[in-house]
Length: 284
Image (cartoon, rainbow, N blue to C red):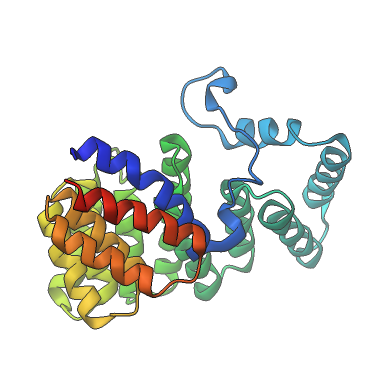
């Protein structure tokens, strides 16, 4: 099995893992189609994306959203604006699951509260979703939004290593750093924390992610191994480790990781995909 085949096989499993870890927020069955080419312009525009998604909804929902957005714009006090933004965020999570729009409003809520806790919570939520966003234009825009939130939190507390790591992670996923959008800029930020504190497992995990993005799969596996040793029940780390092993050509270790995930989940769809992956590796 070549690396392209591995990546193709990973897609279905990654979607199921998104459902397992993030729940209905990433439910593809609820998500309207979002062909960005319909925007008619280069690059990503959240306003165009927002309008396009709304136009795909039934007319009563369009009316509800347009009225709610107008009320939000005209809100005369922070409490009313907060209430309306929360309704919009909830709509795009539960009524019609479109994660980029859900996080768009979560970011606005966090900025409205403007506390380190609210800013970092929203930013970490975005960072956690980024691996599951398949459209790179949307992913890069969301990464930029997450980075802005982390930076605002860092201005409130410059000593929070998790915030620094979060900024680095967002850069890895496409957020611009100055005039650059090079993932290595993000890796370097995270590495600074890891070198200062080798026990920081969030830093080790994000360096593993950086290794995957830069296609240094052996290095990624080494980072994920360190995290998995400290957090043996963390299934997300096990999946990342399995992917790294697989892409590095170590089928035996990949099978062992997938088997561990299989043994620790109850989701039947996920179990089916895991069996397919294990059998495919065994048949190499």
